[in-house]
Image 1 (cartoon, rainbow over the protein chains, first blue to last red):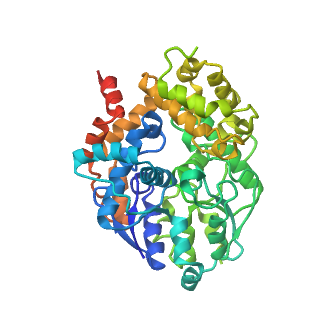
Image 2: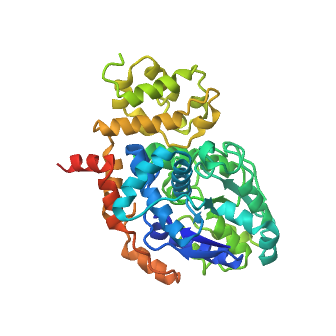
Image 3: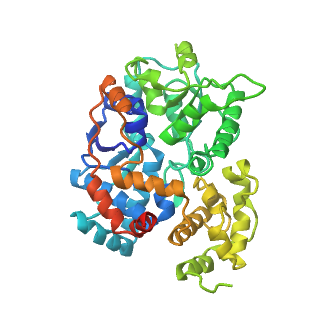
Length: 290
Length: 160
């Protein structure tokens, strides 16, 4: 099982510890990761999609071409990259006229989109590895750990393009959490957006949204939040430190990317996967580990 | 009322937006509406149906959507509101109404190939974690593609 490993920007350039845990965990369960020479920003789903959808598709198409040349499907680890690359891939396979317009632009840089690969997310790829195979590698089952899963938006929606899990009642991330021996708890407004998409134009309101979500998660008595998107990670992990509450102590909820949780269950130590680089301390979770 | 309306915007309203029967499912499920009560995608669709597209395009509201696509999923009429909002933003951007924060992001991508700079601090952390050096981002090709699109024209106008 080998994939063109699409890193995007936020993980390698701002949250490299997530890249570390992801490489270690995936390789441990038998996924070979091929680095993509020359891959850039996916195409950027917030600013660039909003300003010029066709430029968004063109930039994504260039990255798709690199994987096509490698003859490998793409594995994304950011939900923004996933939405971008998947939308470009699916739309150009469906719409001949779009594909022709984009290929005309790509010809200026000597590339051509052929539609020969698929774009997948990390949950999807771990599903292909299979529960039995992952289970066989587990060294430290996370028994008794209560996890609040945050699937996020672009892993699932718009469903017409994404076609992965149920867009409003997903189950696959929860299933992978339970596979590690942990409990995936239910909490109110689980499917509500973290607010990251508002950060650019209204940071205060973006923070208000994540504060509301953190309060609901805190009330559900969880040991950590688990997610699969670096933009959600920044909202929950970094913004959490900045929220001042008048009547209560600051939030203190550890936030992990799924591959970090998986790495712990596979027996990697917190120091080798760089959990110290989280802004919100993960110590309360580590103390509870069996 | 539809005087001067770009053709593709008129077609979008005729084919999609007119199906909105104002139930408000979009508002009820919208994260932004929780944080900003004035934000109301139902009213935005109503304004378009009533022909007040200029006000919608020049207002701040279209830029407050997080693009979570929940309204896209819950709309009983299949209006595809989040996609409509992307189209409205594209039109507004062509009219020179894009928020500067968005244009700054594009500038970063056009000049480095990435949305974030590669800082010395991150390079040190990567080394400490035993991660490979960050690969080049094909920045010349990225810049060339941007030049060939409408986005390139927008960025050019920004500079001049």
